[in-house]
Length: 135
Image (cartoon, rainbow, N blue to C red; front, side):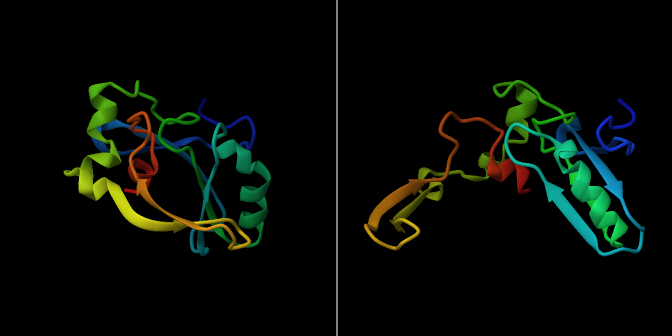
């Protein structure tokens, strides 16, 4: 929809790479200090409906985005050419780049730590991963 039913703000579109579209909303004074609100799993920018308004009223230029694959942003099938073209894991050209060696893992208390190799790749090869969103 042209306007978010949750925030009454216009839904705006950023044309990202490979013709993928990222939906965002913005509120607050144009000269305000910028703030970016990023939602968690299974929600979208509307999740921030109260926060975006409150931050804008305090003078912040507040942006709330729908991550790629979420909300009103593009959601190509994960195995499609479009999705794989923007997959942030493409930057890893060798298996060694994917694995952090001998990382100490533990609990919040610091007890029972252990050393392990950590594979950075998405477990099912999905392009909807941190590396894609972080570029």
